[in-house]
Image (tube, rainbow, N blue to C red; front, side):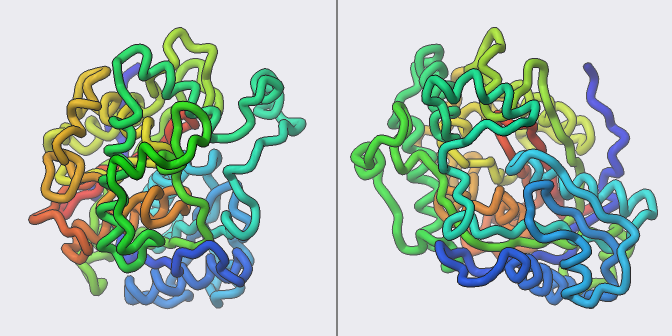
Length: 392
């Protein structure tokens, strides 16, 4: 399979970002969170609700496009659609918005995600198979006790450790880096609360080999992003953040977070598919990336992503992340906002905002002269990614 280069590279841009506060008890409806995040993004972009003619969200979002449009006073939608698969859809929203803008189907598109995932429907709770094709697949392993996202990932993590010699301490280095970055980010839930590797190792077991501090948060909040053409972006207040590539991937034998029937489960071939497309679309290579926002719902999959995206060879990620290489000032700093482990879990949408801040030069943990940022979303589920850059 070859990667397509037909994505409208550099022809669209992110021009506005917004978010609510991140909490464990928002005290308001998910629709209100979506509206607040969108209002913040529009103010950031210097736009009015009447300028927006496109909306993109997730299939699992409870706030419908027409309710968001009506509540904000938008004057009509020419384009509205949704991307499937939870966190795997984050960067796909940007892909859909970019394609719509480039095709002339909409001028300004808002991508949004909002939920009360801590105070309401907790994604970390045991899954109950339902009468869908995915529910039928889940029935094969929930009966053996694999009923939570942590348990799904634990199976892969344990196999990865067996194959490549990775340890729990290697996973812990990801948690330590993300919490270090969150500790200096006032918007992060774990602001001023860094951790040590010793604290990681002492945290309680969730599912062997995952400790509590290997698992992302459950959060309430909303995030929104505004996409338009590169030409229109030049007339708006902020430095445009151009979309150099956007891709999805669902590899052979793909299920949702499990894919245990493959010959090798200690890998993420869907992320490799996304990476190949992004490098072809953007004309970049891993060495061109100044910082990365890697989907960190569970620490082991950060290591697997580094390998699948080409930053290091298979089984070498534990060496790649050693010595602070993924911390601010390191070889490839990741998740400088704190990620889902440290800032909030909003299906990775808050990571898009951080990528934009890095290119604008307004991030709390700013990478010097940051021009190219990689963002990934969803690992083990159908996956997506984007490459953002400073110039078209």
